Length: 470
Ligand code: UDP
Image (cartoon, rainbow, N blue to C red; front, side, top):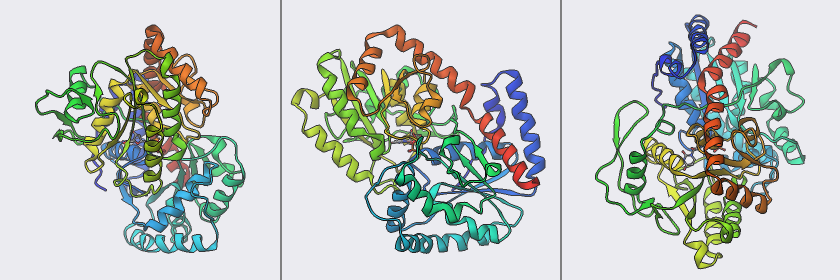
């Protein structure tokens, strides 16, 4: 993958003096430590999902700081991604497609990784650092270690309380993960007990405020974007420009049919929004049902948008099509009045900057953003609207509870499966403008304090130092 270069000054401009100086000090340390080394990152997909989102920005800041960061994406077969999605679901405590994780799956997993490993061993050098992300890449660890390299494995998923399925997911991964020089989790509780505490790191994700996904947009830009793309009606806008990650200007394409149900959203209504991959654990059908059940008590000007990627565009997520189908079925089962106010939308993935700009505009347009996940590793889809000062209603699971302080920087759902509580929380925010404003303002500040890249980059430098210098 091509990696851009962003000067750290840009990030420093958002920080107070002390934090900005600390960031620049860390850059000096990183340059000295990594002078003749390359920091390789390997993951499973170039687009779609939180890992790809974060790598784009963090690696570019690394380059801006003078460190040679590079990004490789695995080449996998549909069978490989079916197995790794199963491991992913198991680590979240869910059976996924219900299939086994036995000897045949292990053989197929290792066979698919073999050509990737061959390529990797051709390009990496013994002094380099290799950061491998998520279960898809874990199988690369042992051979890299044998070759004298410094593999670090990072797991972006996990479950607060382990169960038999998490145990079986970890059993599959254990022999690959154990030889890692360090293992990173988004939350300490995600680490299985056999990970040596001296090699266990906890590093939560972060958000970059300057990407096409997160940059501030004027209200007029938001409106023009959504109506030109056919997500909000009516459309009377001339061409719409947006800023790409590399700073160049992109022109929005005129899309039709992105709203798969309910047509485009009228421009004079308030939107409740969930943006997610079509992953069962994000519970998009539950959002639909909870919203529809609460409709009689909600103000008449409120619509729901459930937005996810075009299912043909995310190669490492075989579940997507099925979950979208389940949502369409749940929509069809609703009475006409509810159907008109529920908009399932699919965003094109063939231009990731345009996709990011559309997500940005949707998040800034929303009156309330929800994330009703049943399990969530961290949830950048919570961080993103928080940065946009939106009131967020989200499940008290995984990393979401590290982000939202209930009643201060958003509202948490104690039980993500409780549709009554879900509907009530949404209604609460829609009824009370002052509450919505207060939650949104505090949310942005919370992200500024805890979830920007300076903290994340500094943690990486500390980790690399430990790995390289012992
Ligand atoms: N996302 C996107 N387009 C979509 C749906 C999701 O760009 O149609 C992005 C979303 O904005 C966020 C990431 O995918 O940046 C999802 O990350 P998160 O940590 O919430 O969950 P994950 O998908 O990694 O489980």
